Length: 162
Image (cartoon, rainbow, N blue to C red; front, side):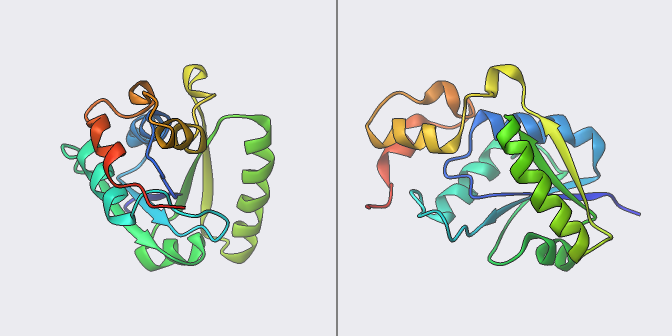
């Protein structure tokens, strides 16, 4: 059976931390679907179409990667695409507590879906989309926190207004 993982997130923007987790997970799965989800607790800074375009550009030469979008529960999306795993990155102890609770609830809802955690590399621990977004919002140079194949000027062009 094909091992498919879903890596959910808002990816607003997609960072080198996200990229690292996915690249390190590639040997573990036959396919990884990067699922851009709608988070009711967050207001999008970049349009979903732009985020999807950037992620596809990062993994243009990786046939095991697909990019999708979804609104609703991640476990429901997993069932829809026949994924058996949810992939999550952990930066801090607080991330672990939050992700553990979600993973346990997901397991109760859909027993056949496992959550797999990968620890963030130490050099990426401080990087979060929220911090990178704030740097970009204030026209700072966030290039060291974004995948190298992306042009930083693209991130300065089209942010949503608050």
